[in-house]
Amino acid sequence: MRAQNLTSETILSLGMSERSYPEFWIGDTIEVHLLVQEGSKERVQIFKGDVIAMHKKGGATTFTVRKIGANNVSVERIFPFYSPIIKDIKVTRKGKTRRAKAYYIRDRVGKSARFKEAILTKKQKEEAAASKKKAKVAAKASKAGTVASKAPEKK
Image (cartoon, helix red, strand yellow):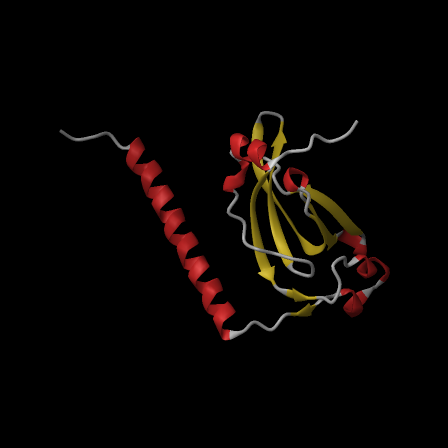
C-alpha cells in the first residue's frame, strides 16, 4: 500500500505546518522526543543519534537517525517529519559532512564512525543563542498562560 501524498494545503489543514523544530541536516546529532503510549499512559522517550539521511518530499518528508545502542549494536530509525508522535527535536551538535547521504557511516567502527564537529561562525553562534532565548520566553509564556487559566478569577 502506498503512503498518502500530502500536499502543502493538506499539511496546512491538518495543522502540521506549525512545527517549530530547529534546522538540522546530515551529520548533526539530534534528540528526537517521542510520545510513547503504554496502555492508557503516555510518556516521552528520547532517541538520540546522528542524522544520516533526509528525504524531502513535502508531507512525506522523512529523516533517518542512527545511534549506537547497548552492546555496540547500531539502531537506525526513520522518522516522518510531520508525525504526531514527534513532540520535539533538539540539535545537540552540528556535524560536518561532504555528502548528502551518510550511509558510509554504517561500515565504520569507533572514532571513524563519528562526524567532525562543524565550526560555527560568530554570527551563527549569536543566531543560535537568540533562538534559544526566544524558545525560553515562549515556553515561559505558555506555562504562564496555562497556570493563569487554571487559577480562579477574583472579583
